[in-house]
Image 1 (cartoon, helix red, strand yellow):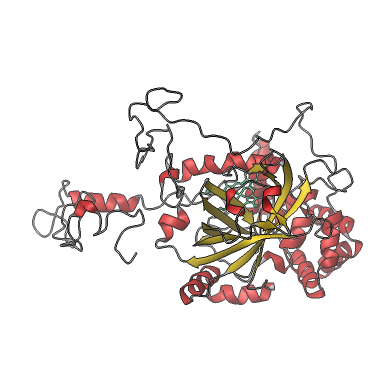
Image 2: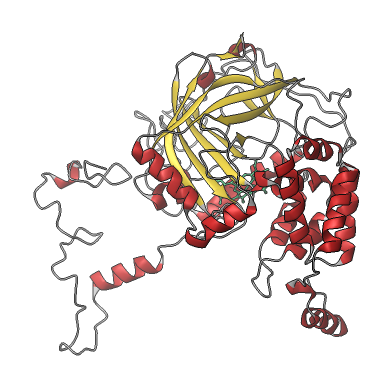
Length: 535
Ligand code: HEM
């Protein structure tokens, strides 16, 4: 920043270790050695050979060799910004404390700093931002009670409801492992055996699958969570964000035109708007249901493939989210930031949504691998409050999480000789009761097509035409068995939907996918003859 401090807030001219500002712009290595020649490696004579004790050269080149960490397995391409959340102190007309004791929501006007990262899902770190894909909308709230991460998407629902299916789903959406080419046939091979995805497919192949940029799209927590009040009573909640900038989606041909000249348009739009002082803003809403199974509904409130009807479960405003500062460094902040659905604060809780519970294991697991054991000590991930744990050591430990006055010999709890103490609870624990067999079964009220049909009928003509044409384009490379199954699903959603896709395919030239070439079919046959299975 302007003071010359680095992103850790240390190491600049104001850092005590440097004494004065004098010589602060001198190039050094990371040992603090001033570098007198940054142009020539040390060699025997000016024609070489080079010697191996070139500490500066070796340190510089080996650090460069390690500049990349593994990119996120999904949501690799992203853009981030800092800002704040401001609470209304109410949920709709009621005091928010009736439903949750989470401190960040309680007082009107209370501001909590945030970092938000938007992303696409399937493409790699430099893939075009015009691709048809959900968009990630992940928020880290740095609250006084520690961090709360809300890891959401722009679309309010998801493809699947069981986390066991997630790796298969992502493999089918990613490029072919042989050719490294994207292939709609692989994607629809999976989707045609996943009827619960029909609702999400309906959104993604419509213009809602290509938001115009990150500022003009909605956000949603997608999964069902709980709010818990002082008495330990819970309600089910869903979170939503509505952009003050309005919503704008792209037709395929508009996206193609942007992609012809710009692979970064959404990052650029966000960055430049914030630099201009146009700070994007979203209003935050919750939908609330009582914490039970709701047998009166034709779907399960824990099913992330379903919308909650806003007529019955109104959007209740709780605050606003403003983004007003670009990161100082893309890698240190936007790349190393680590969000997870397990990161909740007191007053917020999980529901029994299976997808949510599977996600909750996955995020911190991948981040220990992607960023490292001590990823929570990085400034972008560390809470903006005191941290005192008995966790110690591990790769890249940056500091010891000790409280002032803590006996440094005591890194365990309980202790009577100066260790850390448990906190007092802020209210009664929420203690749901369970009584059921341990099973492997899907939920009872799957209703895979009802809401897909409602969404299809709610689209305007342009959205519906675009949906049909995008689906026909993608399905035309698929073999007939896959086309037939998808049309069966669309017909179950709405007969007009299925009929139009069928008619479109009848008129479309049948293209061939990469996996259905004669050579690929022969490779499968050869592998079978050799007694091998192929993927
Ligand atoms: C990123 C797993 C479903 C939203 C990720 C990452 C993993 C993952 C491993 C990479 C995280 C990292 O490297 O830091 C899963 C699993 C899911 C699932 C196992 C289902 C079982 C969802 C759903 C949503 C979602 C339903 C939307 C509500 C996101 C977002 C990111 C992400 C926004 C990017 C976060 C960032 O910007 O760093 N997910 N995910 N995921 N996921 Fe999921």
